[in-house]
Image (cartoon, rainbow, N blue to C red; front, top):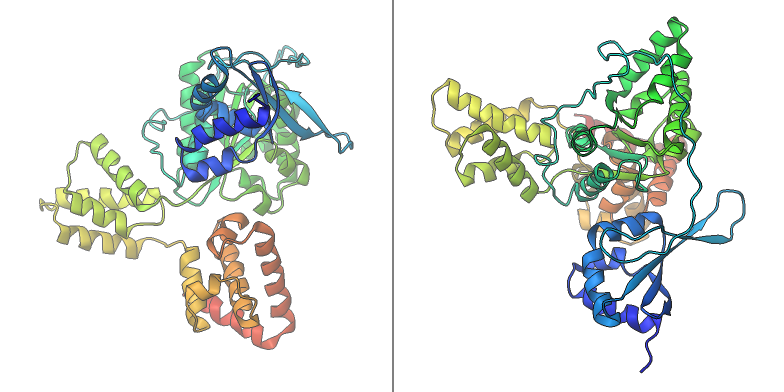
Length: 475
């Protein structure tokens, strides 16, 4: 039987499916379309550069085995990327990835335009504490990938961060925007990427700075009439890491100057890494032209760590501090403190301190006393799960009913209220809210929030629902 692109790719998929997790197969291989088979060269169409780079990073070895099995040692893989161009023509065009990749599988090449090189800068803006032309990175070396433990809650963001560290400015993850709630590791991951880049590419200029500090420097530059020097300084950077970029909200001058800096860095193949407490779609008072650029690369969410990840974090923390604790105590702390990593580590530090200062052995009883006091004294972030429970109890239904597909009016309204309060009281993205409340999409959550706003204004009874639930969730 003569081989075709479809039969070869089908056999490859059978092999891959047997060797990776079901969800990973569905996410990364089902969207791929076999295009043609030319001798030992199989052409496949992938939806984006993101797909190509993710497959190259995670699955190329298994693909190589599968292809070699079907087509022999001369097997080659050609990636074809279908994209819309940005000049109004909606017909897709094809981009073929250049060169031969590091895993020994050929990928078809085309000529790429040369990038513009930045002009020589004679008078760069000097940030206090950073010497002229010798720019200190401001990175914390203790924040590295080694102690940023991987789990389901951070796998995408961590993997993308490592890909950027391996090839800064050379992946589709530019910019890389890492977002999530307080204490989930955004700053740690941003530093880890920078630290890894400095180790691998010591000649590159890497700078970490908070958005607040960037804004302060810009205000000083305006006072001293040094705006152009400020821009020129930041255009010197090879890898720019800006923490808490949501701080730019409402600051039109800072947004404007960052827009020019970002454009220059991106056009010249420099890497931009950003962190935020919310997804681009949820950012308020950020100019649309900036938001669109934030979406050029990858936005990766850090979520709350699951139980297994929390246990790993605690064990790693104890190992680094040279402390041993019984498994039952580690398990108790991991089950009791669920909000974020910062609080988790804070609880274990409090426990060790209590034991050391009072010369008490660390027992489960002591752990319960310390953790209960710690949890009580820590400002709690309201979770989506908690909001769903409060809303369900208020309407005398269970959470499963709230999340169900039913279109009964009172259940739909309860579900919309849960989505509304999740957006109001948490820093989760709309997509994450929808996923947790019955596997809905981002648009459904947005519609729910608008519906609640409208009904609260026009319906007296519904307005009472909103007021009652607001009191319950705020108390």
